Amino acid sequence: MLRWIIVIFLALMLISWFTPLLQRMGFGKLPGDLRFRLFGREWFIPLTTTIVLSLVVGVIAKFV
Image 1 (cartoon, rainbow, N blue to C red):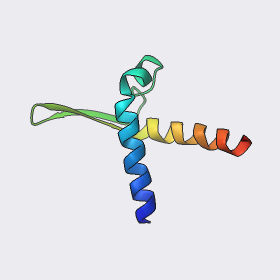
Image 2 (image 1 turned 90 degrees about the horizontal axis):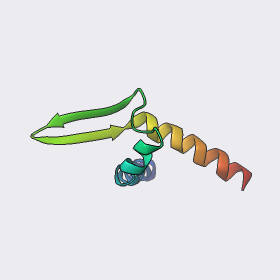
Image 3 (image 1 turned 120 degrees about the horizontal axis):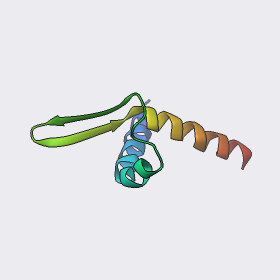
Image 4 (image 1 turned 180 degrees about the vertical axis):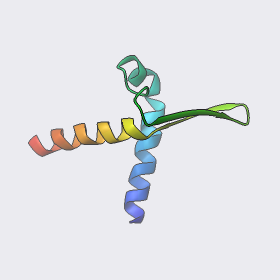
């Protein structure tokens, strides 16, 4: 279980780093992606984007 928490955390970090590129492709604006301001800083939690990209990577990995 701890392994999955670490994997999800790393996936969210990678998506956060690639947010500008993903937004140009239409990701990051899906329903379920959370964006809010807290303590003067904008926070972005891409839940739906993470699920969609995980499914895409899973399908690609199945065929490789």
